[in-house]
Length: 461
Image 1 (tube, rainbow, N blue to C red):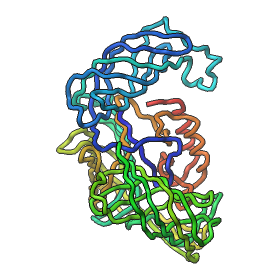
Image 2: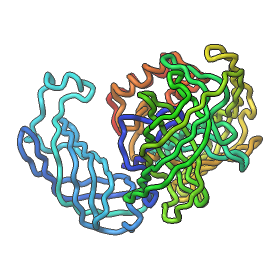
Image 3: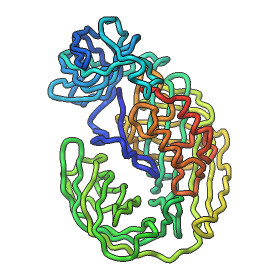
Image 4: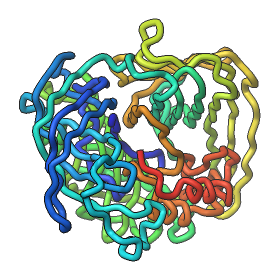
């Protein structure tokens, strides 16, 4: 398994916990062989396993042979045993997921009646699994193209060399098929002027000043830094102008010159998204994405409502001509024909707006490149400025990665249905709309998107 977690343009998955993408890791092919012990209510069983899969390992683990410890869980069905857990090799730990055929009829399974709420899985039993394995780590390019899929999410942070804000998603099968979409707004903020409604709350623009200390957790290290920033945010109507104490939860991206924050402020039982930047006066901070949290003193000054207009670009891969791994110096490469649209919203108040979609490029040639150890990406399309950004989620698998896993917990389940149900019927320009749920990119979360999740319900990867 190679899966890295982050958050979307409008939402942070609440059910996913992670320490962020540890940037000092790289994708490899892993072969494991040895004996594992399965422990559960039906008893304890020793089995021999041998499997080949992809994973993301710490850079200090070079290609070669090792002995390591597996600890995790096993889902035993009539046909297969699915393992999910972690491997510890030379004091370095990384997540893995793999499947072997079930050749052990003596391992009991639960009855169908005990698992009615998992009927899409059929009859299976869960066990704890652990043991010592012989491990071989080798180049990931050895994985057959016809079996290898990749799922990528990233932030768009530049357009034509200038700041931009948005995100990108890519889903591809090496050597055969790809789908890529990007949505971004030129400038350093996603906010316009005026009000915004989400069906439950109304939001208004406000000046926000934050002061205090936040803790940044970068890989295995933590750092305390001082915050003093002023910015504009969309604040719930229920929050009046005044002084507050608030908690911050989110992410921080550290560069040589700045620390850029994106996350949520919680004020008097209300939450709202914020983004702000401070100078980087901490030379010891790693130059990477970190989690950030802490308590801040907040001053909120609401701004008067005014008519406003904002625009973003949508980029879509129409037809892929090449989908390759390790091509011409790139970690991942897609070439083909692309469409680019300019989408404009003009608001007169929080409930009334007009949306205009204009084509900028139709069937233009272009390339999607992922470089720098799967950290950076560019979209170079004829007729538009160069688009650049950072990868924050990567899932690299030797079998199908199904659509519909909204909260990135590696299974399409009821939580994904609930997530899309809350946003059903929304369109761009409404705060609850989430581009990541618009699977057919028709600018509406509708029955097609709901049935996409329904059709894949129970699929794991």
